[in-house]
Image (spheres, rainbow, N blue to C red):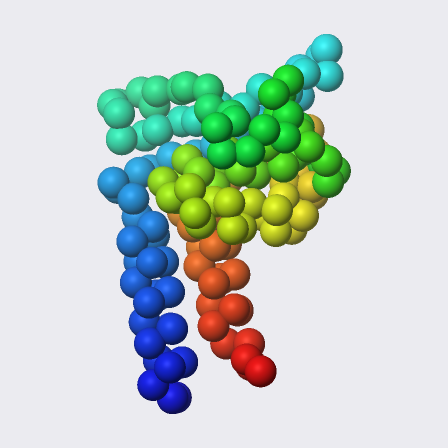
Length: 141
């Protein structure tokens, strides 16, 4: 491997390791459609006590304002884009990485969910690490 490619790989690997376990989060994200077709999304954090605590997932409209009216999933629109961004921001704790990968995450993951779903912060970080690894390994011209 050439020095430039090694430096790029080391730099990105370092960035992935930094977000691979932010503050030891043991979180699972859940979504469910209500009878009124509204969508509820929440976080369960097992580290906060014997009984997992539950809190709402923030929209992170300060990063991108795709859908101020709510999250959605199961298609490739603005509600799923806002959900993908919020999930990546919460799981990664890094706005730059979240902004870089949320559209891909929306297309490859969020658009495929129907009804109820759940995903762990670890699974989200693994998705991003896999996307970064593909960028590193693709030939540059």
